[in-house]
Length: 424
Image (tube, rainbow, N blue to C red; front, side, top):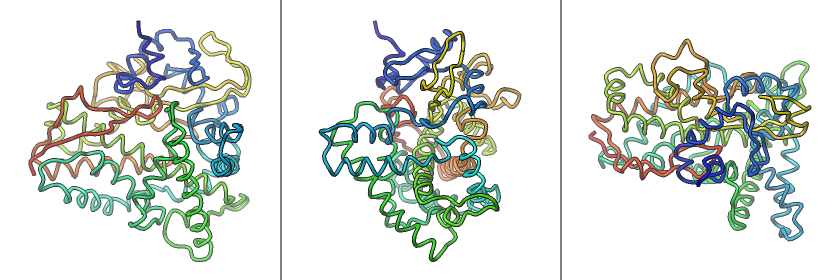
């Protein structure tokens, strides 16, 4: 008899498609469950997760991306005597840079200082000013396939949209965009995937090294000649009484912006479209009133959270749900489960336009670590989906829904390919 929880953390295809087959039983247990595969206690209830997020003094963010991410991989490579000299040097460089705790994996007061320094680059005014260029980009991407009557959404739209936006924000020229995407893939490759081959690991660290080389040079250039991009804002960030960001802090911050600006929004865009093309009533309602698009986006964020979970480390012995979690233990906060917790959301598996009175979803986290790029992700998805609705009369899935392939990860949730046909 199969165990859905074990299958989930082994990233079996059926669980990658619907991790909620495991989340429901885990929530009913109430007590945190020890997951041997990821060496962490999994928390699945909304209130338990929010309590952890609101207590950074008890729960450190130092291992936020978990055991499958690039830094733990680097640690294992450096410790392995059989690692090649080239790969060892690349892994060592990653460890040296990652020693600078930054935003996602930083605790107060370091996180508070960094957040203050970069907040100005993510103001509502700055994000609102991006809308015309994001709308133009969405239409240019659709122009490339509108006459074909069909498109594969992930490769032809969902990847290109956020990649181009974050590349432009960081001042990366258009001819570098494919390379930029390859770097992003390298940093996200290990997250939630525990079975990487030696060749994949070597390619991953070669790409990571390229990223560091490129942006080390770009940081030096921005110091000499600042421009109107996010990288210049990071390099020049100054607040009275606060120490400027170090070189390694900036590089680590750029990694986080790269990944957050690409993979998560790609998955969100595709999941919103999948929901629309598999729910005719919803599609009809949204076509009749484009003002409903932001509500659909919020509900898909809750139902199909691109980031299914994040890690914390206990700074002291703590008791949760009757279980004592020892100091130093890793805790996996399962956002995807919390966002369908029946104790917090009425009819949690149903998309509803009226959840204003219910608990807020955790797709972007909560508290001081709430995602800096959330306004940009929301903007890109709202504008991108609205552009599809305006440019087409009908959109249909050109595949059986059961054949739609999902990414093989327990931490990242998204569709690998989404073939569509439409009438212009």
